Image (cartoon, rainbow, N blue to C red):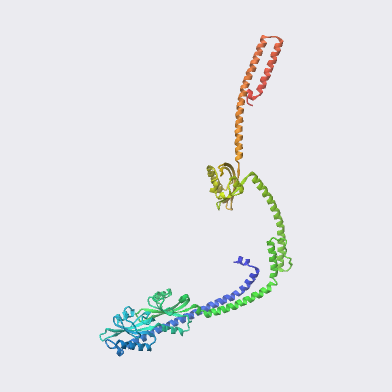
Length: 576
């Protein structure tokens, strides 16, 4: 966070500080709005619970008045005959319905469930499947059915039923009064709740029986988890917030209705949209927030105008100088007075830095020229010696060759996949296995190495390659890459082989020559001995002075020649 703030321009930092001053006011407004919403929530809870209790009370009153109405109808003279007249009853029910408009229909059914008379025209049908019919025939007393859709009026109703007994105590007729649930809309319309509020009824199993906005859509379906929880907890009343009609967040209040002491119970649930409940609190919050923002904007505009002409002009000049330095203009200067506050000191530092950078640029250019010269010399040396340079990245398992490596292996860059296995395929199989083992040994122990191997070119020609490489390790002494060189030593090996063969041939010839000379020496020695012996014989047989003189010369010549032969190791057979 601190680093991010430092990266923001000074202008925006200035605005941020002004905004930060307004932050407590905004937080206070948010807190006040939250408290207002809490109060509004509690008020809405109380109101929804109050309306739910009102509807529950009306339901209890409706139950009592309907019970009394059905009892009074059963006591009318028209009901006393064992078989009451159908038309008389139709007219009677119609008249009673006019006087009691809160009911959707009033009718009578036979003990077998067939409808006998009604306040509205009808086609024959049976109520034998209705809960209230089963309860009446079982208990022969007043019963309440579930909320349902009337088969005669198509309205959402709550059925009330009461038996009419004969003198033997058997059921003669069953009177049914269907209460029109839409009457409860009047309760909501005159309540302080918002116009978009709704209410619904749930039976004792938690199934929806009626909803004011969608009377028939979810009839019989399970209610919300909150209602299910209220059933499990056996709560008489309460409130909760959940998603309701039209997928709106609503605040609900519910009240349980006990029909009779031991009878199943039902729930009345009244809901109101949260946004309507929070309308006043939101209005206050947005009004306060708007006023705070107006104050902040006025403060920012005023401060901006003031600082723009005093502070930011000098800062903009420094920024312009810095951008020129960034673009490479090392001769630029701020041209500002160094004595004016912190910006003057900053301008001085900028100019000193620019001067230092200019000097370093000159030094860098000189160094680059020297490096270029060294690089050219190196490239000349490498190309002249036909030395290829390679690198193996151990992390990526990628082998990189320079152009001279491709020339050595007679390959195009597209022919080499840049992997160690692809490189090893170019080597003689035995050499490839040995070279790969040497590489892994060097990686394991971090040692440099030199070696030789044979390669096979695409033209099926074998070349002898000399290889030398260094292992590069990281700070943990773990090998990360290997850099090495290759050069062709085929011609040198061939020359060495020719020299070796020439030396061997020369030695063989020398041996043969030595043998002949030795043989010649033996023969010459023998001849000299014979000459000397013959000279002795001549001196014995001829005693003339001339002969003796020739003999002595011959003997002297023979001895001199023998001494000279002794001086030659090859002829004498001696070793020095």
